[in-house]
Structure formats: structure tokens, C-alpha cells
Length: 110
Length: 113
Image (cartoon, rainbow over the protein chains, first blue to last red):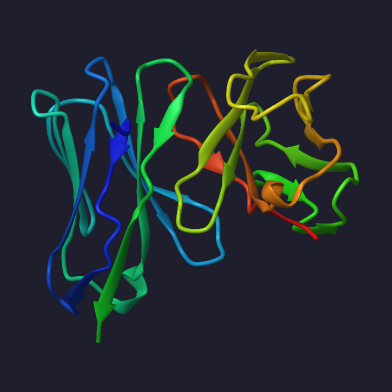
């Protein structure tokens, strides 16, 4: 079983819709959770970090964490074509080691 | 302020050659990481430095790979006797501490011919 799992996609949504990206992890002691956006040919860029159960909102982005279900998600409201990228989920068990998923490719259709 | 800087941005080398990849982290960041990313994959952990010492090098694929950070700032990833399978993007990241978000450099795209 992979430590951090994401659907590779592509996930296609129309412009203006809500994009929902999901991530599950296997290590129950994981404490820190991050979403990174990666444009083709570029390096990962931090979007959100979340550390406790519930929702965390930042602009059009909302991260949701459910530690009991070992599940973290990212919602993007009012999706724009510029949001088209690969979204990487990263998990840390509270030490330095960050494990990344393979990423979900998002396509926002104009 | 300045972000993580990696040089070179691209490196093409012949099989069997030696290469060095450099990373200059964000000033004040004590934690430095090297990751490797192949096409369609997420970043794969290679090595972590806290200060000058390699706290965890368990991700280095074999003894052809080595990394140093002699003064606790700039780090160099060294690959001996390169193989075609080493071709990938090598990403460096730094963070304030071991549980803070990673900030990535632009990466070095290594191509071994």
C-alpha cells in the first residue's frame, strides 16, 4: 500500500465550478498535511497547510482534514483555467520526513 | 526575500560521468532536503540535512549518490558514474524547522545520455 494515495486524473471541471481533490494516507501518526500546486515544467508551490481536523479556508481554497478516516482534501471554488496544474498532497508524521503522493492532474475547461 | 536557488537548471551528461548539483536554501532555514521527481510521479525523498549533518540519507538510491552541506547553508548533491536511470528533476527544498512547509527551488533537470 502506498503511503500517500491520490487519483492521478485528469480531473476535468468547467470554469467556475468547484474542483475537489482527494488524498488518503496510511500512517496514523501523521500530523501535518500540505497541498502543493505544480505547473508543467515547474517546481511544487505550497498552497495550503493543515494540522488539525476540520476545514481551513484561504481565498478560493479550502483544505479539509479527517484524521479518523485518514483523508485530506482540497476544494477549489470558482475554478479558473489558470488553476490547471498537478496538485500534490504531502504528509508528515511530525518529524522532518514529508511523503508526497503522485499528484492529481486538474484541467479547468474554459 | 530570495527563494531556494538551484544550479544548474539543466544538466546533460554522458553515462559514466560525475555531476554536482548545487542548492542554496532560503536564509535562516536550517532544514534542507533533496528530492527526485520523475515524469508523472511525486517528489521522492533522497536526503535531509539539519544544519551541517545528514540526519537521514535513507532515500539515496545507492552509493553513487552523496550529498554534503559543510557550512550548514549551501548543499551539493554528487552523483558518480551516472546512469541513464538517474535522469530526472532533482529538487531541493528548505524549511524553517522539521515540521514546517517545504519551499522548493526550481530544480535541476538532469539528462544522462
